[in-house]
Every structure is written in structure tokens, then in C-alpha cells.
Length: 104
Image (cartoon, rainbow, N blue to C red; front, side, top):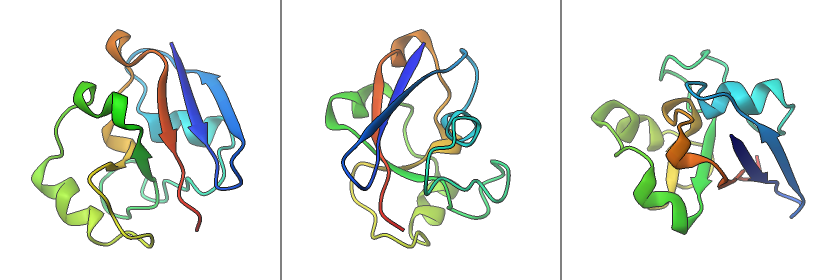
């Protein structure tokens, strides 16, 4: 499966992501800038904030209550497209997903 991150400078980086891997882990493994994942995906840091491109929003799982609260703590103001990438798990339905990484 593939995921593409649009970086703050407008460039993109595409990587292979195994089914079942969360997109924060994939970003860290592929040296995506501004995706830190300091808490290791435990929903306690919000350092893996991304914007899901509009055409993919309906395919990712809904924001849970705890993620919703954590999104209020992100450094970059949240939008309707904001997600914590640790909460998006790669599946066949998400093959080709595109995410935008906010500037720090």
C-alpha cells in the first residue's frame, strides 16, 4: 500500500506502508519531517498531526473522543481535516492516501 505526504515546502514523499501500520509509524520510518510521534502513538503528545486530503476524509475512521481532545492541543490550528496520524491505520481502502504535513 502507498501513502503520500505533502511536506510544508510543497514537495511530496511517497512510501510503501504495510497494512496494519499506523501512518505515524510509517512517517517516522520514512523520515517525514515534522512528524515526531514523541509518545509512540499513545495519544498523549499530538506531534503527529496531519491534514487528511479531502478525497480521503470519508475513508478514514471517525475521530474518537480522546483524539478530538488531543487535536485541540496541536501547535498548528486544527481544521476539519486534522487527524493524528497515529490513529490512522493503513488498510486496502487507504491505498494511495494523501496527507499534508503542517509546518512546525
